[in-house]
Amino acid sequence: MMKTIKFNEITNKLPIHLHKFIVKQPYKSYTAQNQSVWRYVMRLNIHFLSKVADKSYIEGLKKAGISEDTIPKMEGMNRILKAIGWAAVSVDGFIPPNAFMEFQAYNVLVIASDIRTLEHIEYTPAPDIIHEAAGHAPIIANPEYAEYLRRFGEIGSKAISSAKDFEMYEAIRLLSILKENPNANSDDIDKAQQKVKELQKNMGKLSEMAQIRNLHWWTVEYGLIGNLKNPKIYGAGLLSSIGESKWCLTNKVEKVPYTIKAATQNFDITKPQPQLFVTPNFTHLSFILEEFANKMALRTGGLEGAKKLISSKNLGTVELSTGIQVSGIFTNVISANNKPIYIQTTGATALACRDKELIGHGVEYHKDGFGSPIGKLKGINLAIEDMFPKDLEVYGIYEGKKTSLLFEGDIKVEGEVITGKRDLRGKIMLISFKNCTVTYNETILFKPEWGIYDMAVGKEIIAAYAGPASVNSFKNTGEISKKITPKTVYSKKDLKLHKLYKKVAKMRKNGILDIDILTSIFLKLKETYQSDWLLPLEIYEMVYNSNTELELAVLNYLTQLKNRSRYTNLIERGLNLILKNE
Image (spheres, rainbow, N blue to C red):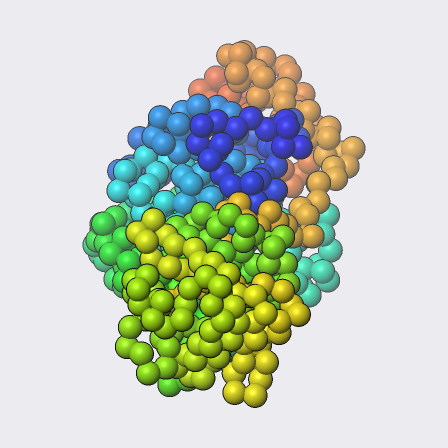
């Protein structure tokens, strides 16, 4: 599949582990009705949002290469997005939050390839191309916001998840797939809905990922900008929802100043939001992001950071004060006086410095895990990392020397020094031993028969974060959900309807007004497709001001359909757009 997807100079920079989430946009699978859904939403949105959205929106649509008439192609969008330093790739619905944000960190928008059905034209719980392309893409034309989005991805991809976060992601993904699938049965939807509710009640303390996901939701997805009394829309979820974009500005939705408190405000993806946060400007978004980042283990490290990684049960990294980075699945931390004195991983582990893997210390070499003491030697104020060669010699840390190192907290390393690795500044960051035993009181942490013992050097953990230090160390980071969005199965009746949509679209594109053909199509709709309101609306748009019997007949028919409560607002807004009253 990847061989059929064209990359450009921006997407070429994506690490290999993100490639598996990219799919080829199924452009030929979009039906004529899908194209009409896009056109309806976009025409309505552009007309309405020109008055209520942030000023970047309308200009951004042009810069992103997005037309109101047809669903955009990734190739076309990328040719235009490249001019503002961004790109877009197609994905299958929701992808894991860490992966989603990592794409953003590389200036790449992920765009769900599916499009909402006519039944969910006002709002869909599933990400779709209207939400992604027409919601996210235009606002990144604003340089301040684009940098916020990139920075958010950079920081957010390092947020540590809890073990329950992935379970919640899978549950929400399944629910969104079922709700948008016209072939799904109601029992399956109810079960999925119940699963999400149960998980929401039992998530426990919010992880870093859960909190930063909240910040993402209340800004990137559902953000308002300006003042509380008359805010403008910039969040993609609002920009792409013809229902919520109008409703969110009413007094029924509480407007709250955007602060770091939004990190603990959860949301329900299946319902319109009861309150929204208003930022005074895009600069304020970055200010709150930095305020939150300062509280993350990414910047605080320490014992708490190590514990978060262990609880996550996912691949993560700790960085020590020397700059050495240990990446793997952390399973144990020993502490004393509320400080970590020993860390341990299980399974494939890699060592790095400045996000580049140390030669000879990849997952093949450290396939069975890694463990190392942290801190100073007992009774010695000078940390190993701060010792000059003469100091190391005094304390018996040099090549060929059998030595015994007792660390604060009583971690003891006994063995023969083989060699050490230093960084570019000359600081020692790794010491290798043979015939080595590592103990903590009576507990044996490493035995001589296990081979070479590599000891990371560092007096403290300065950072702990999700994912590997070097993107090249682990080839298969991040899981692809097994719940694939099923291809919609259309009945013969549906396919015949799509052909009618196609006929009308072709006539509109070519500027042809054939009343006889349109009358024939209209009569078929009245007879066979009484629940379809969008195609009659498109026919009315074509015959409007034609002073024909068909014009009056279609308008009367649409007026009758309006009496059905679920269509009233949709038809009314469509007619107003034609009449220039929206």
